[in-house]
Image 1: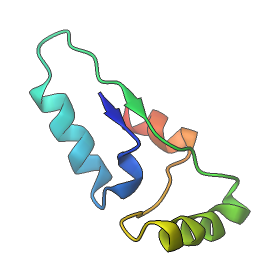
Image 2 (image 1 turned 90 degrees about the vertical axis):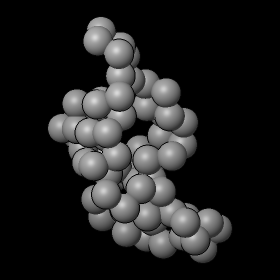
Image 3 (image 1 turned 180 degrees about the vertical axis):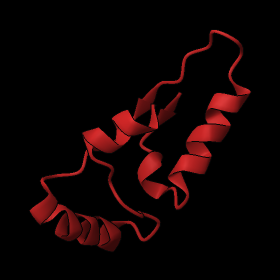
Length: 69
């Protein structure tokens, strides 16, 4: 389980792959994170998040999370 961490990862696919690799057979991966806003506002939202927390990289959209799985 990971909560509010994915938006801090630089290499999201690698992190996701590693989480899957270490799961026991039949294990479940639970991800809780923020969802990116509409594409037109996404860059602005990420800049605002970075001002509050410089370790923020980017929020993923629902579609991007679905593609990871």
